[in-house]
Image 1 (tube, one colour):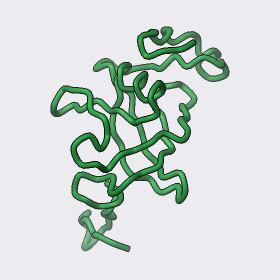
Image 2 (image 1 turned 90 degrees about the vertical axis):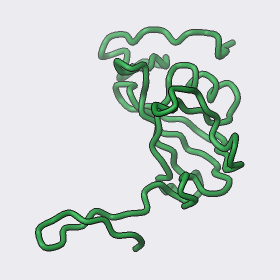
Image 3 (image 1 turned 45 degrees about the horizontal axis):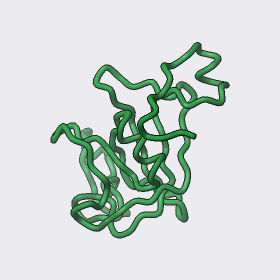
Image 4 (image 1 turned 135 degrees about the vertical axis):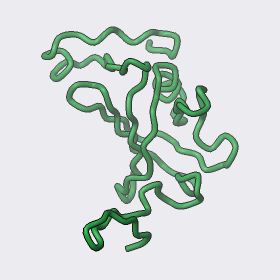
Length: 136
C-alpha cells in the first residue's frame, strides 16, 4: 500500500518516464513540480501552483489538495484559512513527469483575489504594447 511516508522512486529512463506505470516525479532544482488546477465540471483552468514531494504525497493520500508556497517557504492545504478548498477528482502527469494537472472540485474562488480563476486577465497588444484587460 502506498502512503505519504513512502518516497517517490527516482526518475528512470526516458522510456520509463514516458511509457512506464510508476509515478516518478521529476522535481526541479528547488524540489518542485508545477501543478495546474482545473475544474472537474467546466474544465476551466483555475490556478497554477507548485508542489514538493510532501505536498504531492499528501494530496494523493488525503484527496485534499496541498501545495508548496515559494514565497512563504512552507506547505499549505488549499482553503485551510479561506475555506475555499480543493478536492482531488483526478491527477494527470505530463510525458516527462515534471508537471501535474489536478482535476478538482473547487469550493469558492480559487484565486486569492477572490476570483474564480487566477487567469482573469487577457494580454492584448494595444498600440504596439502589451496591456492587461480584465473580463471577456
